[in-house]
Amino acid sequence: MKKLLFDQVSAEADFNQVTGTFNKAQHSTNTAPNLSNRGINDFTENFKSMNFEYSRTHDWPLWNAGQRVIDTHFVFPLMHLDPADPKNYYFEPSDEMIQKTQEAGCKVFYRLGTSIEHSGLRPDQKHFNSMPPEDYEKYAEVLAGIIRHYTKGWANGFHYDMQYWEIWNEAENDPTCWKGSYEEFIKFFVIVLKRLKAEYPELKIGGPAATCSVREDLFIPLLKACKDAGVAPDFFSWHSYECDPNSLIGQPARMKEFLKEQGFPNCELAVTEWHYLVSWDGVQRNMSEENRRLALESQGGLCGIDSAVYNLSVLCGWQDTCLDMGFYYGANPVGDWGYMNIFGGYNKNFFSMRMFGTLLGSFEKKIKSRSLDGAVYLQGGVSDDGKTGMLLVTDYRSNTTFRQVKVDGMDGASVSAILLDHTHNMTMLDVTFENGVLTLPKTAVGSAAYLVKFDKR
Image: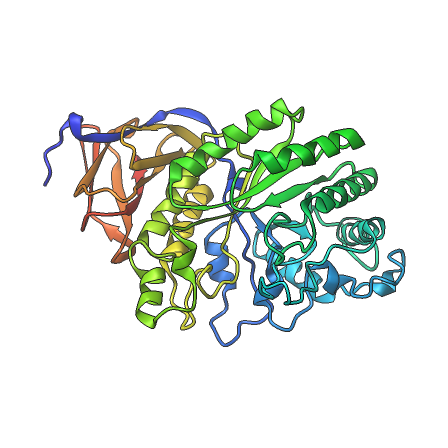
C-alpha cells in the first residue's frame, strides 16, 4: 500500500462544485452499424455501448462492400440527368444505413461529396469519384435534393432531425480526395454553401473538413471568398492525427480566435476526424508481419494502450474547451482504424470509447477538476442529489507506479473502479479512498486509465 502523501497528488476533483453539463457531441464518431456483418458477430450492440452522440457518414461506402451508400456519385449516379426528378436518385441503401444508425441511438452528421478514393498518386493513375464536378451549380442542386429527402420528406423521404451537413472532405489533400486545384475547391465550396443555405437556413451547413491540421494559410482565402459572396459557414471543420493530447486539446481555442479575427465569431467548431498517430509509416501494409503487428498492437501502436489513453485524455481535455463537436475516426468497425480485428476481438480503442461513453451515459452534470501533472487528465460527473459520482482519470505514458487524486465531496462513499491498461480491458480493480485521497495503483509503468464510481447511498 502506498503512503498517502498530498505532495504525491496528481489531480483534484470536487464533487461539491458543478461546473456545467457534459458536451456529448464531442464524443462522436465516423462509425455506424454496417449493412452486413460479414461473418462477424453483430456490431450494433457494441456500437451502442460506446454511446456516441453523432456518427459522421464519411467513408461509409468503404466498409459496406458492394453497397451504393451516402456518396453523391452513388446517390445520384448520372449527373446528366435532372436533379429535380426524384426518379434519378438511388436512396434505399443510404436510407437503411441512416435508419440503423439512428435506431442505435446515434444522430447522423452527413458528409456531402465523396469518400477517399485510393487510386494511387502517380500522374498516370486515374481518379473518378474525386474529380471536381463539371457543373458546380448542378451539383449543388443534387446536394439540395439529398438534404430535402432526409429533412423534408421529398422523394418518398423522411423528416429526420439531421442538422449538420458537411461540404466535401480534405480537398487540399492529394488527388484521393479532390483532383483539382484548391482555388477550384474554394469556388465550389462557396457556390454549394450559398445554394444550400438559401433553401435550408435552419440547418447547419459547413466544412471544409481540412486534412490533418489547422491550416490558416488555406482557411484565409476560403473564408474571404465566403465573405465576398455574403455567406457564412455554420461550422468550420478540420482533422487531426497526432499523439500529443495537449496539441489537440489546444486547437479549438486557436481556431476560435482565428475565426473571430476573420470575421466569423459565431462559427461552430468541429474536429470531424481525429485519431492517435505516431507516424503514417507505422500503419503501412508493405512491411513484415512482425512489424505490422507492432505498429498496430504494441503499447505505442495504432490500436494499443497509448492510443486508448490518448483518446480518453483528449476527450477529458476537450470538455473544458470551446469545441462544439469531435468525431473519432473510428470508421470501419473492423481493421486498423476500427474497434476489432478480423477475428472479432475488440481492441484498446474500443474499450476507451466505451469507458467515456459510460461516463457520459451515467451523468449529465460535470464537476470541477484539475490536473497537477502533465500526464494526467480527468473529468467527473455527479448525480442531481450529489450522492453518486464517477471520475475518469488517465495517465498517459508516465513512468509512475501509482496515481493519487484529492477528492472532495465524497467522504464516506463506497468506491469501485475499473482499469484499462496494456493487459487489462475494463477489469475490476481494488483502489483505496482514505482521508479524501484516492489511490490508483498501476500494474506496470506506461499508460493506464481508470473509471471510478463513488456511492454515498
